[in-house]
Image 1 (cartoon, rainbow, N blue to C red):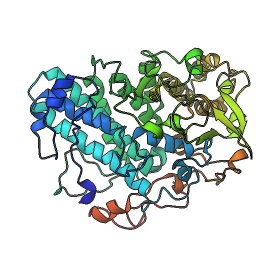
Image 2: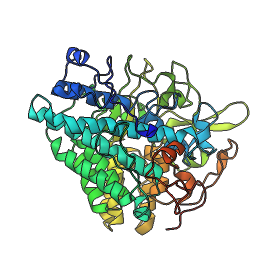
Image 3: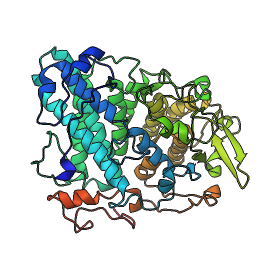
Image 4: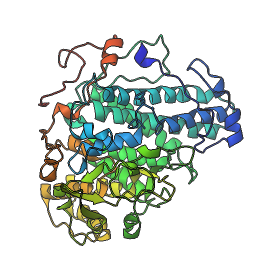
Length: 495
């Protein structure tokens, strides 16, 4: 099965992400070239090196096999989610214009579906090797526990991402097809798995994450490696998973666990721009170095604000209808300016500004998201006073007007605050799908060719399985659901 021929990639130079091994230990480790070569797992140092390779893959070039400047794992997925939403626009620079215009990139015969599928399953297969072999490694038992806990957490995250990309949201589609589940390393002889149900996918996600959480108790990552999963990262992902499942009590519980450990982003740090992994509100982020960086394909190279000292695509701008949602005294509004390119007016944002070396760190999760998760969870449980108190903490920090809404209007106010606070951080399309919202693009979207509206639960939001997977995985039926295993490309899902 070509779609399952993934190798355990232990990169030989320059990718140590922190943990048990020193740089010399890592470089002395024998690289593994296939899942059948388990020599790398003879010691915990080797197992840690294999795990380091997985961390590297999460942000590496060509991690999804597309060999393109928009194939960089997590950062690329975040940018795709944002330009497919309502608030961030593409003015034509770079590849993301195709996502923005919904030209067809969710089709199974277009490269994007295969890129996303390959990225996640390659990562999962490599993690399965770590999980399968680390217990038999020679070394300290606590080190083995921490390695395995991280690998389980990363696998849970990967299946969560797949579930959100390749199926409608859980609360309306839990009985629909999920994604194939692999929990052992695959080889050329491995038979393909069926899709199962989305409920089964989420049970695997929860099993991995809830098993990993106590295993990472006491694990302390180096501040130099903010991409490493610690217990707080796992708790934050669990808050997100339970949010999608509409398990509001659990989403609130896990968000508050994280909030107890991380402060909110202060006004000063927000105004300084997002590029420093040492920001104390950042829970999970990606540090760029001279050896490991996205070069001119980082998010900083996409934002149109003329602050980057290296090449920029001048790609990402803001929708004017989105800008109009902010109070004029809001510090987030003061990070925006209206410019003119000689033909039309547009809005730029200074939220994402690269550092002097063009190696700014990229945010994946921060405490402010957790506060909004907790506020939404409280509001949906009818705990309106607590929901408002949480929301007001953030609004006061941003010098925004306090929300006084009640009932469903309060929920909508919190969802709006998510858009205002988290734009550019990869939540836009995921939130549209989760909340079963339509895509509404008005205002200057029209001038930039991105005004195509989509109804709630549109299949255009959901990726089809790659055509190659449908062809090569004999457990899948090559027909459109409900007759087969392929997602529809168009139309609306009616639960």
